[in-house]
Length: 64
Image (cartoon, rainbow, N blue to C red):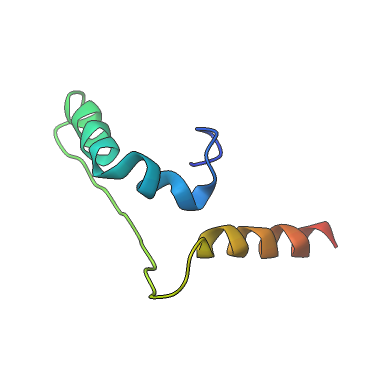
């Protein structure tokens, strides 16, 4: 999702905040009677940009 928006994956929530989630839900809600949303976060003290390193690791394995 972040790449489609031109953002690193790990920065989607931090950069756009909960406002983007509210707007997305409202947009779906306007066309559907039900909205299902799953938001997963792995928040660990002392870890910054963890998702980016995970993506880089997967890309490195896929390149082999």
